[in-house]
Length: 70
Image 1 (cartoon, rainbow, N blue to C red):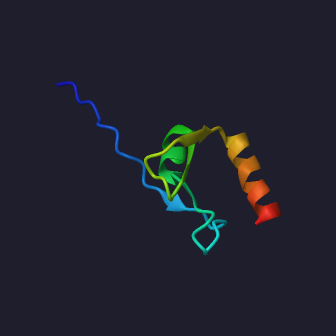
Image 2: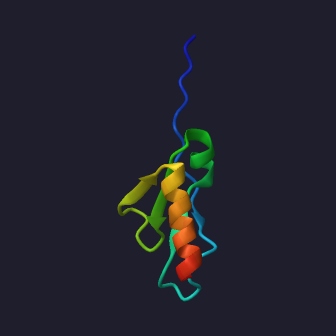
């Protein structure tokens, strides 16, 4: 018997660097990152819109940018 796993949709988590006023809401999918090494990022106000797929270095750079300008 050959079993194939059905990919689960990513569970999105709001970034702690997102503004509380609803203007700057960034979400990422940590479970997907752990499983694949791909860091998915999206705008929480547009969950069906485009997503960024970043590598570890690019994601680290994005977090550092948020820290400096947050």
